[in-house]
Length: 145
Image (cartoon, rainbow, N blue to C red; front, side):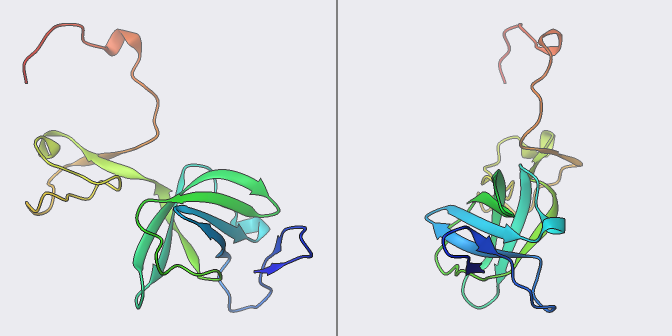
């Protein structure tokens, strides 16, 4: 990205460049600049991948700032990220596994198990941003798990 005299960031014009690149990093906050057709939507997942320094960093879009720039929050450390690194879409919102296979397990924010007990065997997953259940669907009885 190149700064346009303080008026925002201009997208790369190279034919070989990806459609989204990092333009600013402030702690866990990563600003992503995209061309008009590639703008990510709020709550969409993005991945920044660099095999040599950082591996894969997953980010979630929080806000569209204008001029093709989206503000994201990284779900892991941003050490080693640099301006100009390529960004790709995950293709979906961030999802976590649900069901009986998750009982008694410990997960990170990405839905990956961190308890050292191997992979999770679940049939389904749900987005982390979804509507709350309706009041009628709530159970008010006391129960011991």
